[in-house]
Image (cartoon, rainbow, N blue to C red; front, side, top):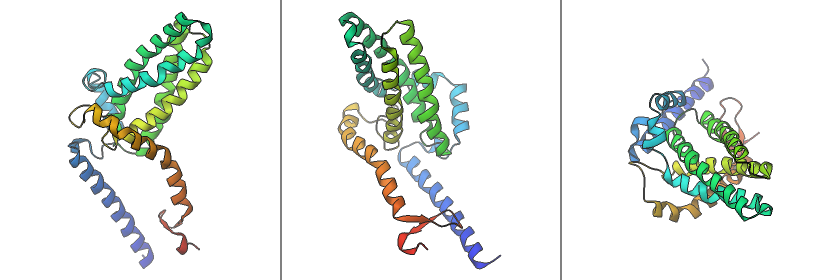
Length: 229
């Protein structure tokens, strides 16, 4: 085994150890060490064995409240041309649906926020669950005979994806949580403007950092642009 290969393997192992230690320290600081480094499949299995934990015990009323404020106006605006009674009905239907579903959605998000692998968590939170939410939302409004349904559903899907990503982002930073780790809703609201700004800037920062570095083809790490060949 050459010296470069041995050094690369040591670096890879050290990086994994440092990442795991960082996750454990973060979990210990938040009082949630029991869930640190759990696999996503393990967490989901636990939730299926105890659905009351998601549906009742950790139902996220904070996320439900914000979801109602965001989503109900979408259908009210979409049905505005059909009269006040239709607008009120569409807003009420969406408000009730959002309050129930968003609370459970956010409860699942809080349960799996630190699970691994993170790419699987991202797929679940940003694709799978928004798709389920879209289907149920469309069915509910179809049964309620909400007019201009297509516009409302498309707008609702965009909001679902963005809010899901933001909930995940903010929960990993100790905000919009319920249970033992939670802060007051007032404290969460004070932090929201900064969190929203950093959430919107995060993709730009990732692109900017990526533009300043290049991949090391041997180990999948990055080196500064000045060292790229």
